[in-house]
Image (tube, rainbow, N blue to C red; front, side, top):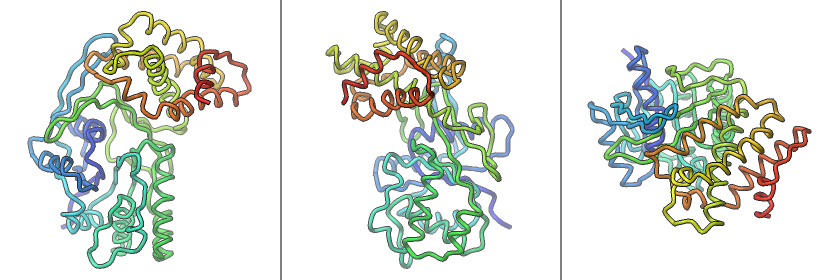
Length: 374
């Protein structure tokens, strides 16, 4: 008798615990038949290794949701039991191979900013039972073994903060397989039988709990681009199937992220305290009024130029409420890291996008802020 389906999750991050794993638990509680999740630690980080015991605990781990909803304080704790076990790729490779070749139907990942990087050590086909170093090296080898065993394709749901992450991951895996000299039929299988979904995730997860668990804001979004053959392991109110992910990416980048960088610039230029937080900035009436003015008079008209006024108006209101979360200590000094590049992407990118609409939109403050970084 074959083993029941599982979802393989690469990444032990507190984000995935409070997002995908929490969604799966809430879907289970709603009566859905949700495959258990097996979490894979891809690094040798000892701190992350300690989470594996927490993932194996049948009692589950807590996710605490704290923040504002419609202006009212909100707090709820969910005991997440959707995760069945935690594996170390380095120490449990044989078990991981068995799962990847057999019962895995979906693969979720969140491997950080450099998650798709491929070191030289993984450029050659692994020999014997050698464990690849990188996520892409591991995934290529595991998918190849599944193909060799005559397995069906899998659905990949990457959650890395990379634009069109499914396309980027597919290109990385196919490129590595090609460079390694893998069989052409395997390459065909990757493209024809596997589903590589583009997704966008949005939730602020403020702190980890130990050995497993997290504290997060109530707001969450997992937008997944529709494509033929795509089937999700469960449904959830915060999962949106979308024909156009660009709209969600623009809202997040040019409202939430833009707002963060605008606040960070104001904090820096004003010589603010090193430990000042986003919520403390929003508690200052003058700062809040200035941010609301920029959103209303510059950001909203920019979205209106692309026919997105209603969506932007709702997202602006939600963003301001998220910024004011009384439980979230999000330091402006942290946001200010990499400030010049962030300004170019979040504000300069917004200006370029609005300019490309053909509409004339006066955005003096944003233009001045973007110009300061040149």
